[in-house]
Length: 535
View 1 (cartoon, rainbow, N blue to C red):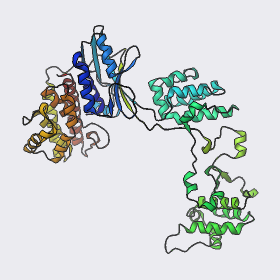
View 2: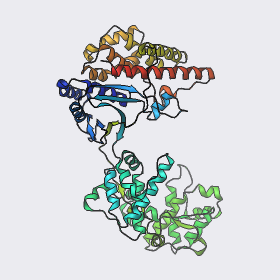
View 3: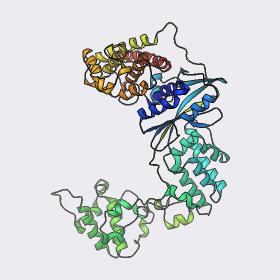
């Protein structure tokens, strides 16, 4: 069972608990869920939390939401299926795995009427800084209007690639405060921060970082690792990555020889260059000497020159120059072909927005992650997908599981055991889940063996023990417990490695697979809704 389905079933169960027993059952459920969940707070670090956003825009944890609903005269709650909103060209079972198909919603009825709530998964910010704090930081900068225009341009470029609306400079702060904007900030936070820096510097200002904002930012030296590899006596020679020279063009070998020979201590460079390359000569290979290296590069064709590490040679040349306390001499003939990896002093003087990597502000990552499941009140909703007339959801699911198991067994797919296990949970009379506990596991294990199901099936059932004990807390009927566990086992729809990822070589097999898959998915979803709403 996917986490959003679990949250839906759990929320229906909790909101149905009698008011007098509400806090008692809530506490019991919290014990079963463990410390990684909270139903009394929103967005607590290191947890999954559950809550709701009301039609008035209040965001409340589940405990506070239930209390509000009680004051409004809570009358009932159920799950309903609105039908998938996935793209028409994508099968429903694929859309459910990769896209929020927005199908299953919560219908909450109070004295004031019925409100539908759609579940949204909200991930914690990737950085310590929140989108709201970033908007405030951007507005306090010199030339704030130009900064907001630059941010609007970056956000709009991204949005238009993903069929989202353009954002004007005047809308940036409000947009970042929204849930959608928070997602964009998670994705583009580093780019947006860089744009703030670049814009302020190009406008002739200095980036303002107030004291209470400093913990949100850091600078990183891209050279730390390489510098750590040098012996202490050579640290003064180290050349930062954005100051390193390289030679463009197709004739590196001869150009490098020309460059070395232009230095007054060329012999020292050749010696050091040969020693550098000799670290990579395979055992038994002929080592380079200063003379052989110079001869090789003077006569090497393009392919031979590429076999020599040009980066190591250029770095050794620059380090040797630093050891002698001088800048490299660049012959006139090579002036157009010698470049730096980062902006030169002259380039930065012309464009202050060319920021060296070590000076660039970066967002400090958030190590205390959380995940929020938020039920959003819908102001408009389409009509629900009604159950098919004349069908029994349990019978339909059993038939679909049987067809899927038969096909999977014929094709040698390991998913056959999952389908057989789901049928076993629904049909076996050798145990009762209402009375299940780890100490009574042998009854289930023996029943599994009696059906010819092996250790893999037992391990799959064992992984659902926590699901059983969680829903025992309400209590749930035997039928409901079995139904929820069977749905968990039969939900094989996901990404790589799932039933969705199966492919069969012949057109007949592929057509059969698609038919049983669509049939199973539809039956599973209908049955899941029935079980969520069951007592």
